Amino acid sequence: MQSAITAGELLGVGLVIVDPCETLYKNAVGNQTIATPNLLASETKLTSGTVMMTLVDDGLIALDDRIDKYLPYFTDAKGAVTIRQLLAQTHGLLEYHSCIPQPGQQSSITLAQCVEQIAAELPLPNPAPGTVCNYNSGVSYHIMGRIAEIVTGKSWETLWRERVATPLQMNNSTYVELENPRVGGGLQSTLDDYSHLLQMHLRKGEWNGARILSEWAVAEMQKDSCIGIPFLSSFAKPELSYGLTWWIDEKDGSGIPTQLSAPSLEHMAPFRG
Image (cartoon, rainbow, N blue to C red):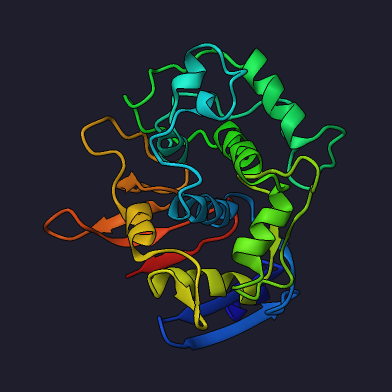
């Protein structure tokens, strides 16, 4: 890491390594510290997906529920897309809509208003839901965020703080835009905070004595969701497949995922378990 700083390849970089029981290594160099907040971009999806799975654990939603069960203004074929397909990137929806704020950008509307625009203006799924695994995640996570608000009666920021941030002691993390948060890419967090999330998944849903997710939910997120359908790889690296918010990087001889990751443009959160 230090050589990359010295060579001018990076301004700063941090690394934390955890196993289920402890932090094995933690360091930051250059203009970064362990507590430096950074916009995580697509690494946010692991956090947001975790929030959604707490709702599944509590019976407030089911993975195979359709969008239109909770958002009846999705009156066309988009309404038949399921929550599982939104998480698994098998929904067939476009990546973005102009109402979703760009990273670090403020918004003049709410998440509810944005999702209503998505329902009215987004083209029909293409290809058909469930037929291709393709990483188009901006719109899908926005829709999920609004479903979470509907079933709980709470804002996305309040919901994620109660269900994930507070029990995981992610005290220096927040979604940058509160009224219309970029649910799939708008979390600002620190190396220390995010390591708690990774360790919780390594511990099969438990962290520091608190149960965040059921063991079933953790395992469901790590399963290959693209078996039997075409998989379009990421632009960043040749992953094998995709789970529910996790990229699948390696499998054993039986086809069981053995290395997962939650990458973004400039960050990487590899996971072995």
